[in-house]
Length: 285
Image (cartoon, rainbow, N blue to C red):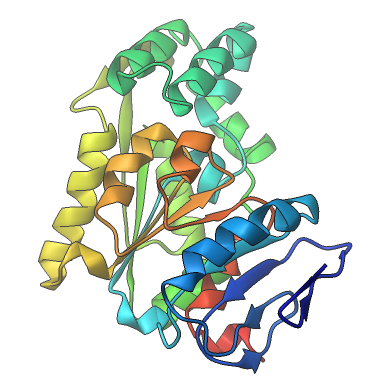
């Protein structure tokens, strides 16, 4: 394909392509467009997206000169975003109900089940009676970080951002992930446990979409900044409220309804692909 002098070639690797308003070649798979008018960006993006997807290339348009340090907060969903699994689905495997729970999880993330709290309570009820030790087993045997998660956190903290893990999942997993990756804060749901077994209940207020948005807003208030200084990354419909108030919302390997409402999407690349569009020097060496 030849479009105004730009040729896209197939690559064996998945890379992001960043379209910006000034000219500078840098990190593999990334390019800045010369003197691209802002109004043209979204139109050009729509024209190039089918080709980009066929080549497994992520495509985004960002204003030139925008830096990671222009933001104050990085808030991220956990399950299927910072980590590669849905923890509740893995717990359900211990009672032979993984497929049943996973089906509800998928329908919820796609937005087909509108009430996240109701969906969560239905799934957690299925976990009643599972030994508490199953949580540690999932952490040790199944929990893996998404590619680029560690690098994104390191760069964000180095740039002075407060980092917040906001999860509709559960505190033992969120605590582990936050500690391992260096999140400043985390918020998640608390599972009921009695006599070493899950009770099939959630204790306290459920972290749904409203609470996720509230957490982002509170994080910004504590820093004395508006929410347009927040970067929010998520994949499911319950992430949409917090993504809607962000200055930069990123859909990571997300459901179509979420992808459509985000400022940009990562479908093939690593989480730290976000840095390519934010003048992050450590990504341009």
